[in-house]
Image (cartoon, rainbow, N blue to C red):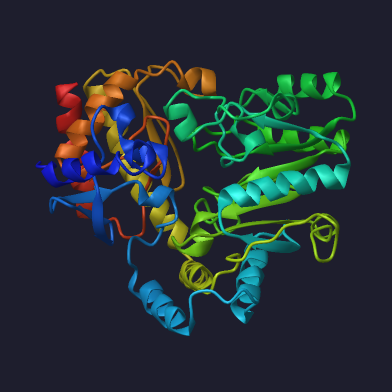
Length: 428
């Protein structure tokens, strides 16, 4: 494929934007090439500045569950835009979105909208500290909860991609109050609670890790985590920015039958437009201003366009009783074929998948945590990524991210992807 226009734009971009991009993973550095600049999208497809077409498995990192530019979503968003862009005042639709989220996720009694997942995570952690009157937070290595200071300690996503597990600019005090442990290691969690008696406010976790690639919780891990936090009077915060409404209407907490104290949402509840949210038990959420003394505010929180897109998206999903079943069937069809190709080509690789998410890891062992993920052959992923890109398949430009299947992916899309993987693996 020809990428000349994208290369030209990138050459100019680095003079004006740090690294030439507004989010690190978009720079394509970890896959040894320059970024592709996108001009538009439709259904399962992306189109770039050189008129190349790609079958998209990034899906804006999750929210495009219906596919790009879904007709009904665009129709309703067009109406919303005509009403205005931002009012700085409440709207009835914000209440409707809160209601539909509460209907789907029983652990949420009240919810506050934000403008991003990062903001929602930051606010949830602050709320947990205020509620428990404790300072320390436990997070898991390789899990990503946005780029607020405490959440960047040993983070996943782009931080992991660029091997900057601890960002510069974080104070020693913040690092000391952020305790980290390997994902799926419940014994180490217990040890941290023993060493820090009556000091831990909350445990925050991606119930299904999706920012070091897809890593699934081991048997009883989440259940044991819930028991430990209750025992030590600490809150359990589920970051479902990616898994919320991706795995099912009630997210990972519904799938694993776990009730967290607080839940962080994003991505899909805005239908691809900027949004986030945090919610949970009434007694905790009532501490948020103006009802309580924990301050949180945002001019664009509950923005009419994002709320409309989210309401429309969730309504479409809710109206189709077999929506998630059909989506999972597509993903299983694709991942089963990938596993066959791996076996046939005798390549050191494995696949982790759940619902409509999956990751191919170039390692000959099951990936259960960050230590496992860091042993992966990233050079092979780079070769795989470039081969797929040249075949019109857009994958995450990092080994440590999830692939997303959407409602818009057709059987032809999946078969073309499978054939491209066969070619790519043949070269590997």
